[in-house]
Length: 118
Image 1 (spheres, one colour):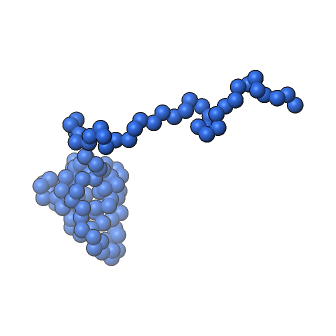
Image 2 (cartoon, rainbow, N blue to C red; image 1 turned 60 degrees about the vertical axis):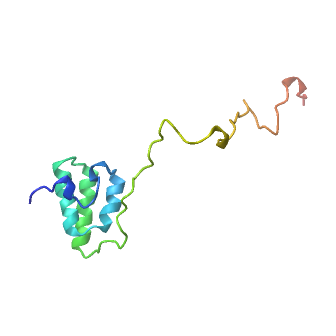
């Protein structure tokens, strides 16, 4: 079997997905699509955790498991990095918090000179 081209893979941006996302996404794929990913993974990154997860999913599908009914998520797997020009105004931020240097704010420490002898 020939190695599939990146553009023909069933998961967009497959190369950029972390292992956990690959494991999640392959649940909605057919056995043929999962086999394509396995061939591609072996020829490119060959990540052991991904290869193992894909093999496990193929064995589940061979044993009669069905692809999940949920659609494949097409959005980013992690939040976009903040740009240098944030649109948040200074008025919308919380005031800076300065924790006390020691003790509990409601119970200030007493000087040692106030200690009573037993």
